[in-house]
Image (cartoon, rainbow, N blue to C red; front, side, top):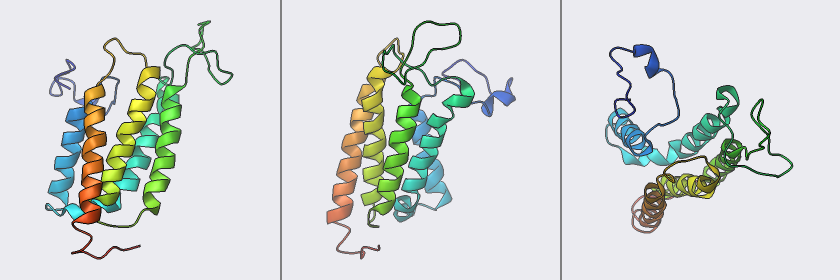
Length: 174
């Protein structure tokens, strides 16, 4: 909030309002710290919450319908729509993301439990969805491509390590 110019002490109600400009890296770091604190550092539970996290993120993107914030770059596709009073039709990019993330959530829930496997695949999938939809988003600076690419790589490394190294010590559960 401070990075975006909002003081949570003088505007406490703004804590509840999620606006555009959420700092993705800081929000992710905060979520990881909150998770590790709540499960007392037991990283194995991360695979259990991965599908729910993906589905929750899908819901947040789908919430664009209530925030009137679904639209991205201009499009002539039949399902594109315009803001009220605008002749320009645009991609409903947030709905693309919501649908893709919901599909990923289902897919991740079907994967076997292995420490860091499902969560690594989830991280890579969610970052990949952002990379896919980023060119369709309205942006002045081009978006945080580097963060998304790093998340794809980190997720794939975690999934690989979890699948290979830890699978021998902890049996897979289906």
